[in-house]
Image 1 (tube, rainbow, N blue to C red):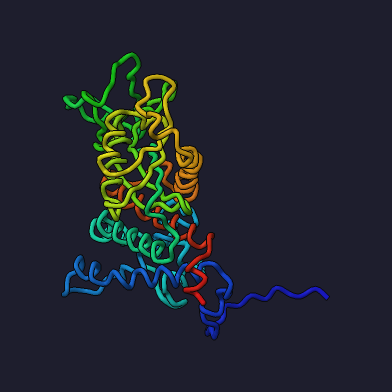
Image 2: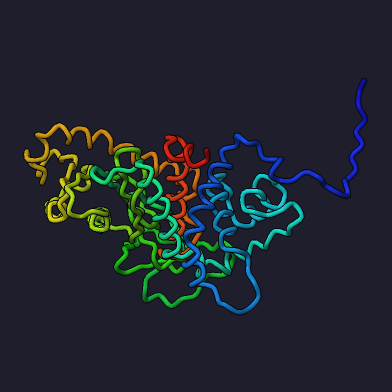
Length: 362
């Protein structure tokens, strides 16, 4: 017998959100881990909030909401708030009851400078890294380094001469003819994002307004242990790599770093040796700075093979994390966004390889 469709909104609900989320759902483990990490950041949160005034949205909720945005590839904060409003799983994850009103999307913009800056984002990233080290999931001896281009939220039309005082042409999408003009970063800059640079990573590639992201990966499980955002330039990769290697822990311990041919330069090789890091850099066909002192060892071949795993992190943050093109203006905001993305990537990776997640949840 066919049933009748008779929908009527219930006045009362007797089922909690806790009962709606399956016990085996992976977000249960993730929320337990994230809550434990955020509990260690109370001092940092207290430092950026005034002691008087009207209570605001708890920063822990906003940070967990941003993790959801990254995990589920939600395009904007407006759509994120809308999804949290009707999605019971999202409500449960951020800590809202079914009757609670969801905050406005502008709350993220209001808290951007205070809460989602580079300092707090790096603190959360470091907490995740320390958790991996505590669980013996991260190596402190063998690393890989690489960089990638992140498209800026700016178009070629915004790339004008620095001495150009003319206003923006009328219309929503005005015609701009720059054919035949020689444009470079020394004489031009973007009026939309002043930190963006016109750059192409390889010969034959198209030039684009972008930033450059750099990461340092440990080779044991492919976890990201450091992140750096810089202007796009021909030397930025090597300079950022040395800066991240200098920040690594246990500086007195010998280490290795794998890298592609773009890092094959005398300055980078010398900088690595100064930091007590053996440079396992892929050698150029001609005029290579890599000598037999490095290439003769079996570990050199292993590093060159393992370093390709770093592309998985770049692929994840661009396809899932939404960082193929930044939605924020400026290098400082992008740094905070990138740190949160790579912290989320590490959490997902730690869950996939098991280890202390399972022990912690048990």
